[in-house]
Amino acid sequence: MKTLLTLSYDGTNYAGWQVQENAVTVQQILNEALARLFSRGAVRTIGGSRTDAGVHASDQKCLILSPERHNIPLQNLPHAINAFLPQDIRVMSAELVVDDFHPLRMPCIKTYAYRVYNALIVPPKHRLYTAHERRRLNVGAMQTAASFFVGKFDFVGFSSAGSSAMTTVREVYSCNISKEGEIITLEISGNGFLYNMVRIIAGTLVHVGLGKIMPEGIPAIIRSRRRELAGPTMPASGLELFKVVYAGC
Image 1 (cartoon, rainbow, N blue to C red):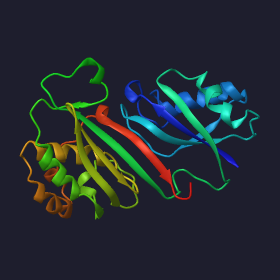
Image 2 (image 1 turned 90 degrees about the vertical axis):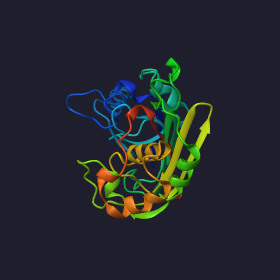
Image 3 (image 1 turned 30 degrees about the horizontal axis):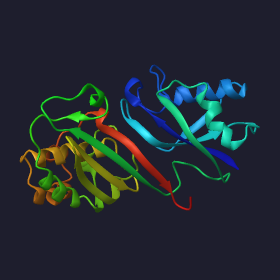
Image 4 (image 1 turned 60 degrees about the vertical axis):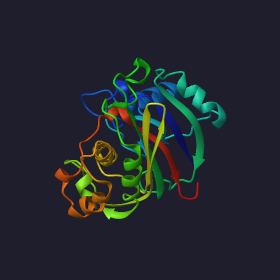
């Protein structure tokens, strides 16, 4: 059996999840904490999602790869690791998975949330966790437009250059818009997402809310496969990896 961690982190001060040579990332900090805890030098990890710089997570999955088994009781492992982590990264739980489990290869449902603060001024407590749109958005139009993203499509027009994906076809299981107070939230679930796909869908829905794109025009934009017809790539601060559920788990 192997150990799978569930992590929550504030991505503001990190250059994303994945280890990089010249930047501080969440995975790097976690690896260093595990090495200190186990006192065995380098410990490798495999994350389930490669969140970008400034993106937050409440349900990141991460597999520990260690040459030796640790002797820390499973229920105590999150607390033990957290003792070596900064306060903006927390291990929320740990569970055992079978030896052939791989977080990047197992079928799963990923859910992201994107939040927009829709008012003239953003309160300080929301500045790092939402995007800001001062112009009033038509939430009803955004809700209608969101429904057109549900299904299996080629989403190449909703991805940024630099993706290493083998295919640009993805299936979106649900896509919903809600509003609470001044915060408009996009919640989208699927079997996977292309590079910046959620942020571009969010930008497209913001353009719908501003009247720049008609809700009924979404299917034609998807079929066109043309990035320039979709909306802008929204800032990373509004994006959160909200939930990851693996098949059979």
